[in-house]
Amino acid sequence: MIEYWPLLGIALVVLGFALRFNPLLVVAVAAIATGLLAHMPFLNVLGVLGHGFNENRTVTLIYIVLPVIGLLERYGLQQQARALIGRMRGATVGRVLVLYLGFRQIFAALGLTSVAGQAQTVRPLVVPMALAAAEKEHGELDEDTAEHVKAMSAATDNVGLFFGEDIFIAISSILLIQGALKAYGIELTPFELSVWAIPSAICAFLIQATRLFLLDRWLRKRAR
Amino acid sequence: MIDIHWVYAFSGFVFASFAVASVRDTANPNRWGNAAFWALLAVSFWFGDLLGDVGNGVLVLALVALAGVHALGRSAGESTSNEERQSFSERFGNKLFLPALIIPFTAFLGTLLFTYTPLKDSGWIDAKSVTLVLLGAGVIIALVVCYLWIRPPVMSSVDEGGRLANAIGWALVLPQMLAALGAVFAAAGIGTTIGALAGEIIPHGSVFLAVLLYGLGMVIFTMIMGNAFAAFPVMVAAIGVPILIHEDGGRAAVIGAVGMLTGYCGTLMTPMAANFNIVPAALLELRNQYGVVKVQIATAIPLLACNIAILYVAGFKL
Image (cartoon, rainbow over all chains, first blue to last red; front, top):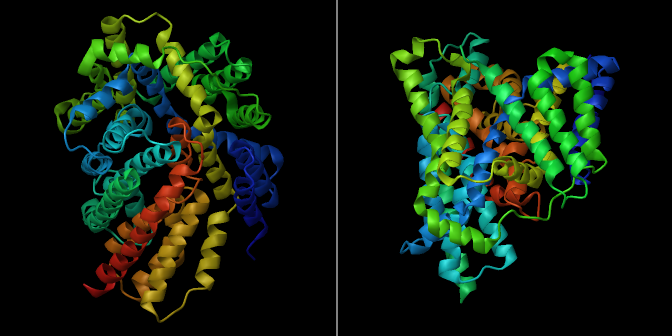
């Protein structure tokens, strides 16, 4: 007999996010409710939650770069990134971001996933460059347009990372796929798996690049 | 041997420095709330392994309570004005990029050295955590270079790190909280239940419909869990292996690799993948906290269609 009641925990998460309660609160309430509905004693649920939190500290670890980024911003890093793009002829938002997308995918495919990222490169370098390119072509940006350019910069980093990393044979997701299939007696080498990440990587590049060039066109239209 | 615990210890110092910066920031009316939040996180990094599971659970509840009662505030102040930054940027020029590039460069060179040269066997760095150890090393080197070259006020890296951390606020620990939620979901058997549900609605006989359901199942379950890694074993058990590989004779490497990538389309569309979708919105100071997810949907949906087509064609027709 399968228990369906714990699934209410998922509903709580969706509802809590939709009603815009504080997400940390939503997640904690959902975790405890799910555990209790699965007939786990409260202290047991708290222990699983605490253990899971402690074991996943590496997820938060990336923010140790903030002091370096903050210090450089204080001395004009973003302004310099803008100035660099401002001097370049023919730089558009689309071109800047497509170039970044390509580099991000290639580096991720070589296993170098943490050389770039939202905190390391997007905030201090990519966003100022994208905004400078947009301003150069279209003058002062209104707030909505600036927000859209920033969001597209963050999205470009995510797309490049997700659809590049699986081409690398020693990345954790490839090892996970290998392990999951091995449990059913299906033996595959990491290489056999990673080559099949290439078609999706090409599709991801083409789709995101198309959207970025369309963004250029949309900005040009609005400037007129 | 340098292992992950060294990096945890260093990270504890960084989070403690965010707490110090918060206390120093008198422009923030809630500065003590911010300071308590970062101090708790420093405790977690330093002493997490000594607290026990329930102790860590209590620490999590304390973090949640601080965020839940809105005890965290934001500073209005910036340390230097835009004009000052402009003049600094003219003074330091393109050399400003160098310290910023030290972190990725250390990761790049270090990964190469410790993966492809005899250094790999030197035992200096724990092979499981090479990347994170190098990240920590890169941060330290970059800080030293900044202090030697720019000669900023002593406390400036503390204050500036704290400024950015407080701009992100509680969202900074959301990804880790969601990972902990995943652990509770696993303990409560959510994966098995969803797998059983998916198994019940599977159409036998139509390969394309089975592929479609496998792909959509990956996307939906990834969106719920915020992580394709959690969805993958469940969908492989429910549909991938029994139906697509065994019954329909699909190519296993494609079902595995492209199945996972189909899940990534879900990652692009969910606030549950907070480190990719919610934290950047805070980090880039977007007004809409779902701003990044919103622009990603138009990439994710055509990409999902491509992935399902690749699954079908490369898995069964080639």
